[in-house]
Length: 327
Image (tube, rainbow, N blue to C red; front, top):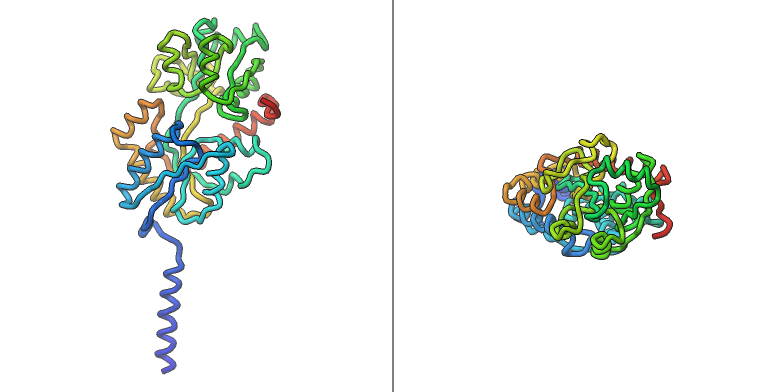
């Protein structure tokens, strides 16, 4: 009787332990996944999120639900993911801002940026420097020369304090010793309108936002702050080509998960996402939107890029070139 009791007890204990073990890549996912996007629907992250979610849903035979949670400079949705259970069923698709910039631009952040880990990089989009058609310089080298001869006289549009365009402008100032008159804007619409009318001379952003102004003959692309030329704009030289490799700024999109998510789950999610992005139709659709597709990422590569961006952003903050106090 005693032996029988011990055998039954052991079997029950084994069963309970097995049930309590975290999900492994073998049985994950076995329920719907929520992909939070901490920005409004209709923004630049929207089409990427929908394409990736649809592809993963088919691969996993489980719904991947896109949930737009804007607010608080993208911190509302990010906080939900940072505080979620680390089981792979709540993930986030986001650009740099809520996992890099906000550490320096928002006081009393409701989460620690270290509470999220990178899963995989999805896309990269070089930041373009764009100018009013009548602005004298036509490339980056000419702009540097002109700025040195006219300190403080170039009106530069900045969209969002602490954002990627603010970072790009501040990086150029700190690395090259230039002085721009930064003009802040809360949205792209007013900024582009003022660039086309000549109220401001230059600005930064994704290629797609400026195409209509260029086609109308009111704007021109000056350079891409990148190592390699954009496939959407193959005729536009990069800052690296012009002899300024230190001037680089991009806005990637990554998948993130709560810290502590099992490594096997992160790897499976990364590999599956890469397979979705490698689909020629998906690649073309994203490239048509101005994105460079990254289909060979991994948790390790994505985390390394994340850490490098944090280091670069901190360096510009510490230089004093990026003023965050007032817009």
